[in-house]
Amino acid sequence: MKELTSVSVPTVRRLPLYMAILKEIEPTTQYVSSTLISDRLNLEQIQVRKDLAGIGVTGQPAVGFNVRELIEAIEQLLGWDNMRDAILVGTGNLGQALLGYDGFARYGLNIIAAFDSNPEIIGMKIHGKPVFDIEVLSSLTERMHIQIGILAVPSKVAQQVADALIEAGIHAIWNFTPVKLNVNNNIIVEQVDLAASLAVLSSKLKAVNK
Amino acid sequence: MKELTSVSVPTVRRLPLYMAILKEIEPTTQYVSSTLISDRLNLEQIQVRKDLAGIGVTGQPAVGFNVRELIEAIEQLLGWDNMRDAILVGTGNLGQALLGYDGFARYGLNIIAAFDSNPEIIGMKIHGKPVFDIEVLSSLTERMHIQIGILAVPSKVAQQVADALIEAGIHAIWNFTPVKLNVNNNIIVEQVDLAASLAVLSSKLKAVNK
DNA sequence: TAGATTGTTAATCGATTAACAATC
DNA sequence: TAGATTGTTAATCGATTAACAATC
Image (cartoon, protein in one colour):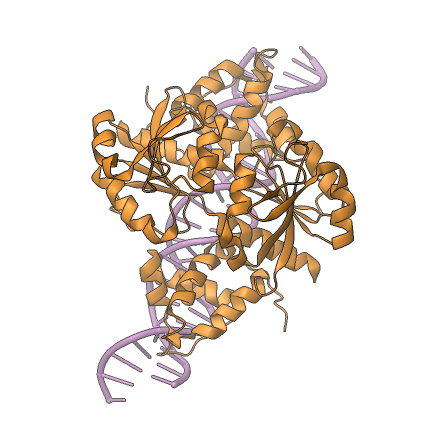
């Protein structure tokens, strides 16, 4: 029942792209070919096929893959079938943007509360989510068995807040700060690295402008 | 003088990490070893060394690399030595967050204006940046020879706005929408793929929870 | 039967890592 | 001289791509 071989990170990163297409065609289509998916995404057909094989679904030769089955397999693998609660720390511009982003629900992510140290914001609601004092982070997070913490605080306090999150029992940190966090390797850290992304864009632009 | 061999994308993505360390130690240190950098970032020493060799700097055996020289080489390669102007389209939560993020200056990126279609916002300033009507995007962008467009609009209009940006002479799009854009291959698109990032986090968390 | 598409095995490619001589 | 660290060449590893038989 469970996947024994784990799926590679590059494959996992492509799954949401597949999902978007699958969701779009699901109402009207029962079977989909790897060619159709690859065409829409400008990928190699064989790559899509390999990815789908990797997540454990089998298709029918000359027919394709069952759309519903694919959706369920991906949702299952990513845990998007069950809503997972998360908390967010830091309600600056970026934090507020994340609180207001309604797309996360599609990915099974539910931000239940935010934390900040600014007394002017504590007690308020941002996009419907309550903002608590960072001092009570530990008690609330532990009580509710929250596993995911979203880190959107200033760089200076990133490590310190990360430590507090881990202390409070968080298992995974989605890190929106540019700080390389120092954590035990039983803690999952996924970094949204804007600097890296901008670096790629900049270097390509530089290359073109020569 | 110019690099003939291009640097790989994985290497480019690590350069900002190196830069952060270099900037930090620059005031006090003249030479830095690949070991010091790799230790701080939990990377392999040889990987850092290869990366640095790749950007065209040479170190001194038994001494290390000249910090200043490294900084200049990276800045040069990424074009972070010259401020590059950019415009941002879409002033929703995410757009506002990006407008307010003062860290971009460190990467030589200067957002000079924002565009939106909402008449209530047009004419206002957000974090000191003027918001213009998306209708005048083309004229302003062309006149100022802006090369970079930051896309932070709703998914529904992402492709359409991207087309308008390209029409206006933009060369590179930093795409914060989850939409896979369809563009000519002379246009650089760099996607900040939150869904991919969340997918990696989710799948790892799922694996741990079993 | 012919055509489309999958599954599987092998080849290729590029990035990472290892090994070691050269140098300060 | 000994130790640290680089530069370079080779080995390894994993992801992507190719090839082709099997199947609907």
